[in-house]
Length: 181
Image 1 (cartoon, rainbow, N blue to C red):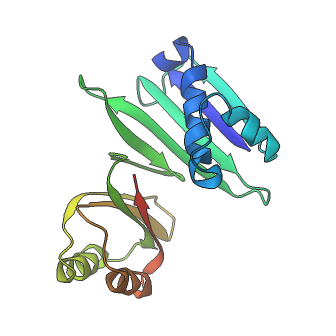
Image 2 (cartoon, one colour):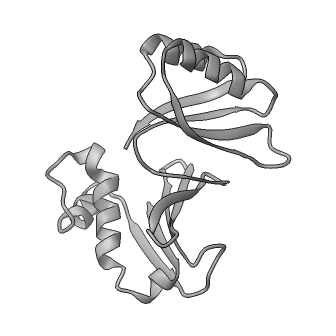
């Protein structure tokens, strides 16, 4: 199931084109390049994925917010929300699976779920530095009372397989994923 929600000023506009684009983007890695804004809803239906859309003119923490929630057959939920920031209207991800922070959805992203203990940033910097990978930006998020924190590192280049293996093997790293946007 996909749930697409709009809050604030964006809800005052026709959200159908954006909803269709979100559906196409979600399907792109699953169904390939033949999916477009027109056929995406039909492809989702053929795959048994229901789509719900909602709009609210109330403002959350942002003047406008778009949220996508994917729910699997087993009930697992994955949530991402984004907004536009500043006069340049630059896209930012501001929520990822319950963690609030801000990062640009572009380039090479290293997404880590790690134990909230000292030394993680330093260990990661050492591994990436030895691999000659530069960290362009990073966003860290922890929720009080939770054992795991979430971090998103924007990298100039992807780490080598060997460096990525070292990252995944670190005792404080619960999960690691490279995302190319």
